Image 1 (cartoon, one colour):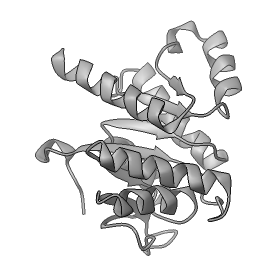
Image 2: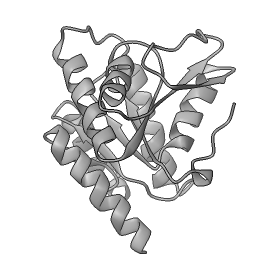
Image 3: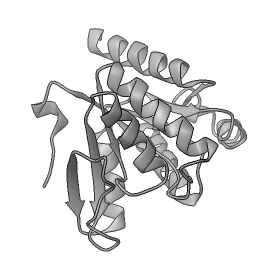
Image 4: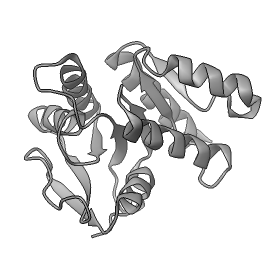
Length: 185
């Protein structure tokens, strides 16, 4: 099933994060808090739909009365986490990545591994190459700071496309401000 966010009044924030975040760990708690704050701000949350941070952000959104979309790949598993309200099933991992980016009106990258790095990098590069219009892309915490600094130093044209937020509330405020500004333009 394909979702077109332009056919909906909801603003979707795609969240990138680790599938290895344990329920009792800091990454899970952070993702759950983010999901709740995004939902309370009126955003729909989209994630990769599986466990770890993806489950946590979906759970936080659901517990706050919001909606969670999970994008899953048939090649991996069509079973999404129990907090997902709407599952989008695509054939392959690559399709999942592009669908998650396509759905998002904005993005938040949580600490994570290579999968999260790919999601952050592809969204960043698509905006950098003008394959898609600029959208707010926010990293949460200091985890990605060295990576962003290295890339921005190597390519000055990539500067300013990724914003860094030190807290969940700062990330949500950045998304609100950026999306509000883009609607005025």
